[in-house]
Length: 291
Image (tube, rainbow, N blue to C red):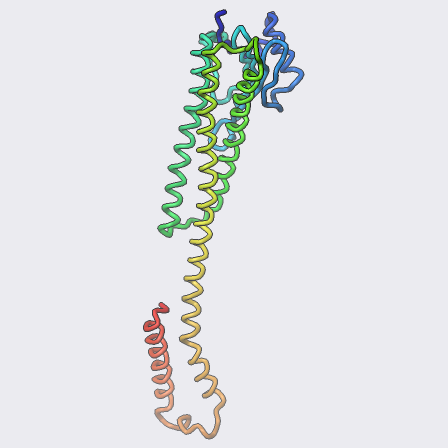
């Protein structure tokens, strides 16, 4: 039996005269609520599922959401929302109906292609961020940038993880059926191949998420080093001038037994002594390589 992949908007599905397969998909969508549920389950007419992807770098540009019915006649895909243009229709707004294998390839390659582009851009962004941190270029917005990347990667992980679970669910349900499989062998092969590709994409996303943790640790280490460097300067300055405080305290007590107080060169002597103490302290710190 010839199978195809048909894409139709939910509005068209709701208002058109539906055949048996379309009616089953419509009723499944009404009962399971694809706006809140994603996954796959077996129905009397095949396999019903729903999935969604957030659009935009941070998922702020809406969603692409759809439900599908996979049966012996092919894949019927009902689009609820397509903010990112993930699904396709012809110029008249009618659903496209490519062959099953070609339609699956177009759908999956579109999802994987966008995912790969996003992960590559994110990877390069994280590399540049790590390079700046290592080189000491720490901006005030770096923590906020890391938080935004974490939020973005969390959205990607959830989207691709749920879609991978759907593909795995389809393959598992097909394997459990001893006879009367929904998918033809060639179509089933497509799902197995793209399951592996989706696994690699989710692994790349997880790797970026873990890499972000390392970057955060590198940022904390860089900030700690900068704080220690500043405190080292303050400590050195305080230590160098601490003997001067002691000298000032001695002379401030104005004891009668301090003849240099009455000496005409007493002021110059105290100044020279202070300079000498500072020079000795600086020499000592340099010798010990404390600065």
